[in-house]
Image (cartoon, rainbow, N blue to C red; front, side, top):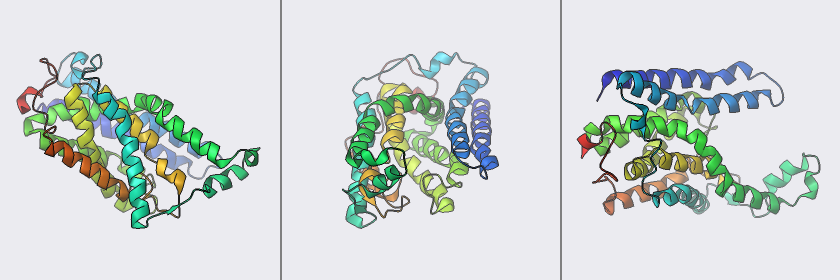
Length: 300
């Protein structure tokens, strides 16, 4: 491991992102859409802090060309189907778990959407089921591709740079540590009510556990393809579809159920990771191609 490179990466990644995460606090008293717009822009920009950190750490810490980050490499194509389709499948499973446990009630009348549309101009003339269908289709098709551009900023850092740098510790430890760092990195946003609004302080811990679990899947995709694009697509698909169960649920606390990041989502993610281990797909025993970025061969 190159300590100088890691120091540059962590310094840029955390300082830049946490500043951007905190900017919305200056607009919390603002009226209308201003506060939401500022938060969307600032937090979207924060997603590229790990990518910027990876670029600077590679160039000035490792003193390697940026080609070692493998942005021009895609790897195994079939892994991209996993990246695209697995997050929505796990999201649907999380919704079913929430219903079975009693963390939400099935809402086929779409009352929440109906109420929201009543306050919009001309909204009463649009059937709620049509809104649900359109949102589901967009979440499964266009939205993952758009979100991949933002997800690449994170995955270039977490999986493209940090994971290979930690691989001398072994794949298991590298996946665990990189996932925990990824989760804690979200702390300023979580404390503002993001993802776990009813339990923001506990949410920091819950987000960390989620990122360790989901990070194992993203790491598997990276190690299989040797490309940040596969986990970036999975990240984009995750952000696009994690909340799909909320279209069909009511009376739900999203800390416990309703999204893939809630407690109900952990079961499916955990079972999939266990399947990867049981089927000997994880740890990845062989690189997908002979040439590998710095740090990979040392872990095999």
